[in-house]
Length: 179
Image 1 (cartoon, rainbow, N blue to C red):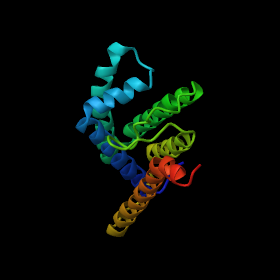
Image 2: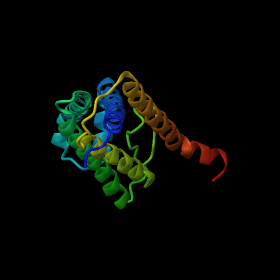
Image 3: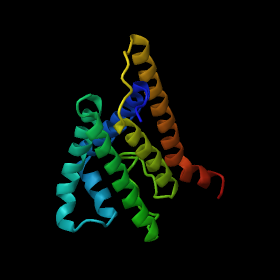
Image 4: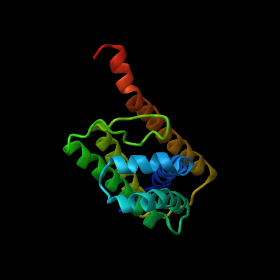
């Protein structure tokens, strides 16, 4: 079922920005990211460093692919696979009872413990990726359509940033209120 291209472009743009930001955090602090990856205890020790080097490059490539019409569908499926893998890593560690480790979602300097709500966040991002992978309805796009797609992506990014800020600061807020 073809969707309006504005919805597809907005989802692709928002995901590209989120993945590019994640890749940038990891590339700017490679030791921090390797430690985060090791804390999840999902990879053999010999694979942690190579994975820590490869994952931000993959995120950056997927982000770029989401911006190019020729690769958008494949890149969106790759983004969906990344979101599913991240959710799986979180779910395994929650199942193990390891809520004390930092999810690594907020970047270096910001700690965000593993919680089930992160699974919901990743499910929403997975949904955006799947929407971006769908075929677009064939129609002519004007300048206003481009503005609407950019505005919609900006709203998604603002909501994501607000939710991420709340998730990052929730433990601090609970401590302040004595809970």
